[in-house]
Each structure stands twice: as structure tokens, then as C-alpha cells.
Amino acid sequence: MTARGHLYVIAAPSGAGKTSLLRALLERRPAVSFSVSCTTRATRPHEQDGRDYHFIDRAEFERLIKADEFIEHADVFGNLYGTRKSPVDAALAEGRDLILEIDWQGANQVRKRLPEAVQIFILPPSRSELEARLRKRATDSPEAIARRLAESVSEMSHWREFDFVVVNRDFDEALAALEAIFDGRGQASRQDRPGLAELVNPLLNPAV
Image (cartoon, rainbow, N blue to C red; front, side):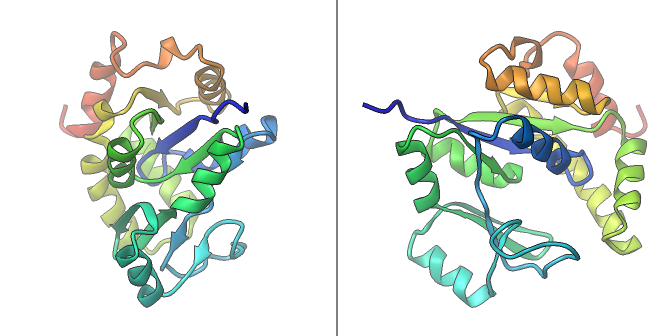
């Protein structure tokens, strides 16, 4: 009998480097599958339907919600995002490890429906670095960047709800921390580790 696969839920505020880390992780671990979420937002340059997201319109998304077709779904900055059940169920039943790259709202829904999922939160090292990364990305307007920075405090305030917290100060070190978690030796990244709260506090309280 094939052992059931593991589900890894990974969340972060915009600009923390989550997507780049996950792409590097998947290159090193081709046996791990990446769940392609559905979204109603517009396609960005170089994105491909079915590879980066399944881009669908709002009416279709709302139909799928009513049909209980999502493990999780959320409204993020006015756009809908969600993970359909069937690909997740199929991957885990086949014994494959699966990554869900979602926000904290979606992670909370998955936690209630699939409590065995391993939950990982990625943080930036500082607010100034978070802002620099958002501006360097050059995909959002100045107004959108300001909004994302304001929302980041609320997003990052949920870090204690996750099993592991990885601080993306150095890309290679953060990637190594993720690999350790996937290998079952992620004790150094546990959210209750000494000193982490002191590091997070300035992220949530800019005046500190």
C-alpha cells in the first residue's frame, strides 16, 4: 500500500521571497508537486495559465465555491484565490508530497480541514527590506505597494499559527531551512524557538 503524501502549506507577506524560494526548492526536489491555484486576478507578464495559476473569471470562481470545490479560498486585495480539492486529493493518495503556496487566510482553512498539513510561514528580515523587494519587483503601482506594506503587518501577525517560521534574510540559508523541514529535521525553524519573537516584534511594530 502506498504511503500517503505530505501536504506543506507555505504562506508569507507579499515581497518576503516565498515564490523564489519555492521555485528553487522544487528544482532540487522534482518529486515534490506544486499545487496550481485558481485566481480571478489578471495575468502578469510572463505568467502562463495552468502553470502559474488557473486564471478564471469571478462568476466561475463563485460557482466553484457554492459547489464546495475548494479546500481553501480567500479574497486578497480584491482578487479571489483558491485551491481545488481534486488535485490535492490525487497527489496525496498517490504518495506524492504537495506544496500549497497560499496566504494566511487559506492556511487557516486548510488547518481546519487537513490538520496533518505541515504549515510554514516565511518572513522578511526587516520592513525596509520588504519594501525594497516590493519596489524591485516592479509589478505593482506605488499605490499598490503602499497598500501591501500596510497589509503586511496584519499578515505577519499570524506567524504564531504556523508550525515553522523561516526568516528569508539570506536566500541560500532560507532555502536550506526549508529543505530541513521537508526532511523532517526542521527543529531550528520551529515557531516557538527562542529569540524569534524578538526578531518579529519590529516587523509588527515599526516604531520599535
